[in-house]
Length: 115
Image 1: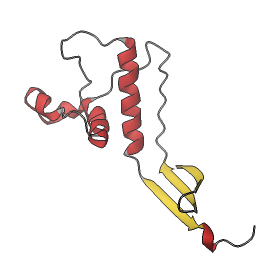
Image 2: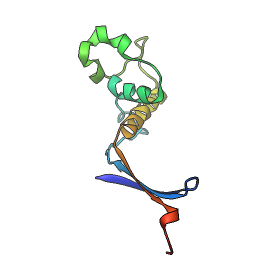
Image 3: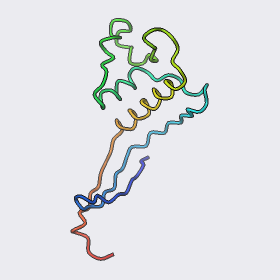
Image 4: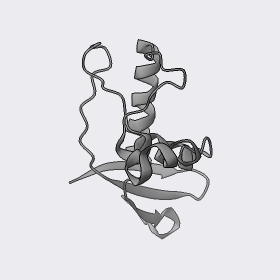
């Protein structure tokens, strides 16, 4: 299944059909019991895309190859605040979206005649 987005690119000018791979994720960030902490692997995808922290250097020795599947922990050992849990879950959600496949069909509007 895919999610579609139809848009007009005013700069080229073209009609674009973006087709994203459907990644069904249900996340209720208003429920304090619902969002569990994401894994280091999910956050590493986010950071790889946006060029931020390298988690591998901190966790390879502690967890070996399985550290990507471990839920994130606060560096000082204290639990994350609810706002931090929500922010971390949004980052994990974004990482799943940006790493999904995207297909694009571009129709140059100079080739379209009439309606």
